[in-house]
Length: 259
Image 1 (cartoon, rainbow, N blue to C red):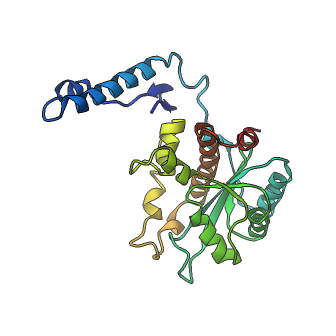
Image 2: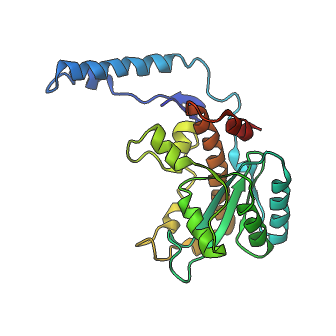
């Protein structure tokens, strides 16, 4: 990885410690150690080619998230987003548990982003109806582990979301299938340099098991909405980056995401 860390506006390029490379010929074959040395050299050369800082101006993506509490206003914003030609929308739900099977489960809020506008709002009133129209329109959708949003849409509306374009989690597995690296938060850091933004929220989203309620009701609403909106925005940005990483990805899809 060449991580464009936003906090220090510098590249972070992980590799082995030099001492490990020097002593790693003990207990392994010479051939195996040669492979490590080869990759170590490649890592250093790749890092040294990075001559400039990753960001001319470090982005503040939190400021791009529009928090709308009024459901009528949120519905108007959703309808306006749907009116743009060539729109591709990422969708993110925050819910009171991981699985929708319990009769009392509910969607707490929703975030949507088309790369130009990122909107986040409580799941209430006219905003729900406008979201339904968006989810079942022909507008291409992006998700991260999209089966989560699909199952909750089935719970809320009785049908799965229409016209999924991209699942960022599946794409990250295909690009690099090592364990423990395919979460949205991890990929947002290594690909976009976005440091952790869920430290305050994450403890409230945990529960003893996936069918039990979490503590989401205890979270300050605006903090929760900002978190949800950032999820949607980063899903959109990562999908765009992943499509460029896939050799043979349909260029028209990338063009639409770059619009």
